[in-house]
Length: 143
Length: 167
Image 1: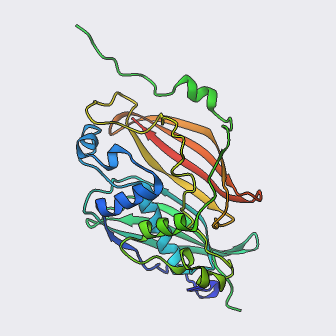
Image 2: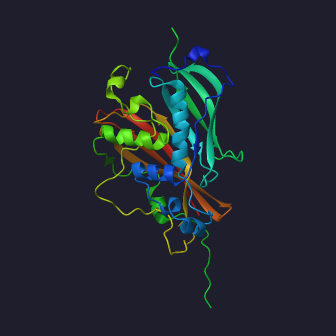
């Protein structure tokens, strides 16, 4: 999947195929292991409850990774994600089914790059959009 | 009778002193292909990660010529020396005091050179600014921290503005 999409072929309003994950400790513990992120809030229900969060919850940066993966899978290996910003507003609770969202809002040539602007988010099974943000990807020309 | 007064600010003198001042640089161990593969497996779990993150033969045929790391890869994990973190959050058996609860509020990253196996990444960080307001958990402070990563050739790899939430 070296190149999946060309600049000329992208249209405003286009939706990026989502990444969908049911999340629990199987996802979170693997992420904790590679990111060396052993924080009680993500491991211990009692600690998370004492902090006012109900039960242990998922890492914001794992939702970040899901959005990054959705973008990268869409554009292909040789195109680049230039910028990604997200706010982690809602908590990712155990057994949530998360779905990434990314919609093209603008495309333009800027600083010599074919830039595509997108609104991004991560929505749970109840329709709660908990991680709003924006992204820029850089795409090659078809010719 | 004793009373516990809520603080009127969560801004500390350390924060005031650190504002706008780049801290000392941190340098990663050389990035291993195995580090990249494991990161990709964890973040794509339970699906198989793309070949560019683990298949050297495949990667040779791309414009990169080698495996690259996912853009969200963190090369600073698992240091041998473990400096005590001031912000690891609440722990079992203790009711957190005001200001000891922390959350990751989000971030903005701009990406430049990709990370490849063998790269050594240097990071520097500074506290940019903050704001306080009343939130769902009472007085809450949002701190904004700027981080830059460069590789061993001096190329900019990433610039990040991260948002920390403390209440």
